[in-house]
Image 1 (cartoon, helix red, strand yellow):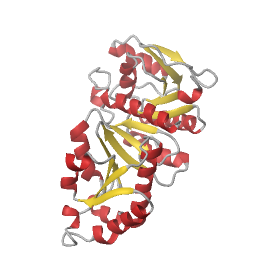
Image 2 (tube, one colour):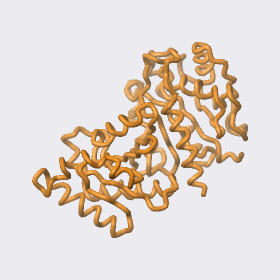
Image 3 (tube, helix red, strand yellow):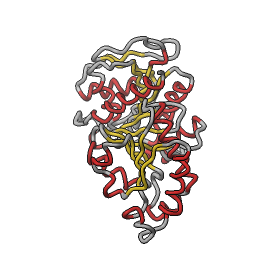
Amino acid sequence: MPASRLFALTPGEPAGIGPDLCLLLARQAQPEALVAIASRPLLAERAALLGLQIHLIEVGPGAWPETPADAGCLYVWDTPLTEAAEPGRLNPANAGYVLQTLERAARGCLDDTFAGMITAPVHKGVINEGGIPFSGHTEFLAELTGTEQVVMMLATRGLRVALVTTHLPLSQVPAAITGERLERVTRILHEDLRDKFGIAEPRILVCGLNPHAGEGGHLGREEMEIIEPALARLRDAGLNLTGPLPADTLFTPKHLDQADAVLAMYHDQGLPVLKFKGFGAALNVTLGLPIIRTSVDHGTALDLAGSGQVDTGSLQVALETAYQMAANRSV
């Protein structure tokens, strides 16, 4: 197996369930060579706490694995903690450690050491308390890779939902939806569905912003004045787009069976439907990056760290999706 088929796995917040998830998944063999970028002592301590017999195999620059690890084994690129981590107890001293794992993974993707990176959850608050401005994985990776525009997409089996706006107060959403932004986001979605998901001619459903997609201007004019003209320009460029459609009827089999992805205007327009359909088996994909990055769809769950009572479903789907994206990209 060439080095380009290695994948990086970052366990995220050391006091959370990320280390647990990595160890629990290591009980079964993965189809690809997966390298956890983490503190080896942390993983050893957490394995002992969980009662898991996982062989931690140290790897790193100049000593990368050539085959997937066997069941019960986990490749680890040792990345030292600043201070020992205790399950469930946040420590701002380890903020730099968390970002170092992400930087190692991302730079490894940029130089083709890794074919993609899969991230377990971080805790934004404690990183900021550690004196490091941090708004999230997405923004961190966009800055590190020099990417001007990225797109958040969540997916589960049978449904993909991308967002025009993400973590904004609802009162700020209408002003943020400009024709330029809508065109950029839609093009990124179209291109990554084609290039990373292997869909030759992506079919995208687009939500309206207002109830009933504005109902001819009676419930809002954003559809008429911004969304429809932007979609018309994109259709002229060859994109297969349907909409804007009322969000309350778009998420039905009649429409979804004819689409590869949905583009929602704001966070809580599209994601409640996706999480209802696939919570625990959904993932987050950052589109627009020059690298492949997938992630779980949940948080650090500090109260469950070290308990063994965690569901690995989301991380497994994130892994499987990263593997498939890398395979599509290499075709």
